[in-house]
Amino acid sequence: MAAVLGLIIGVVVGLFVRPDIPIFLQPYLPIMVVAALDALLGAARSYFERNFSDRVFVISFLSNVVTATLLVLLGNQLGVGSQLSTAVIVVLGIRIFSNVSAIRRFIFQG
Image (cartoon, rainbow, N blue to C red):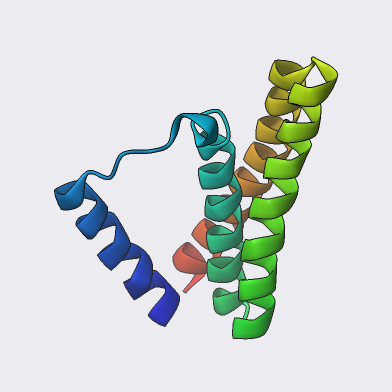
């Protein structure tokens, strides 16, 4: 739950501080956010399944963000950045919706 609390605090601070995002990071930021959201929802799902591990969460969070960013960077270097970005978003989107549906089942089943 510390991760969720940290996320909430980070969002609130980000809303008030309004940081400037460097130009070179702007194409990668949406992919990073979606990858982080996938890891967060995966952690929530594992919490409801009672097999949450903070180590697995941190490794999953970092590896998702770094891998997705590197894939988009590679796509940009190859000249197919938008296609690879779309592929990453689709794959992570499928995982996000899968995790959300599992969380919803746990909540409504009691």
